[in-house]
Amino acid sequence: MINYIKEYCELPPLNRPEYDEDTETYDLYFAEKQIYNPYNLEQELICIPFDTLEEAHQVLKQALEFHETSQPITAAKSA
Image (cartoon, rainbow, N blue to C red):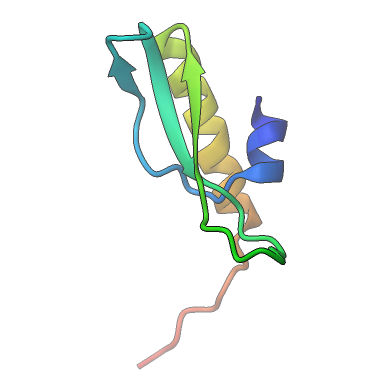
């Protein structure tokens, strides 16, 4: 699942896991990655459902860790 998120989703996630009573799943939402779009279609939301809260938290943690490690490190400016 994390490979799908890395490929198609912008990080960080838009929310923490939310329970959906209709589907009885815990959902994480992501913005679709901005890629070349010749038709000027709007950016979509991607909802990834999980059967358990533990699964959702595990993937959320992995996504946040990947997001943190993929950010460029900038030196702090001294005053």
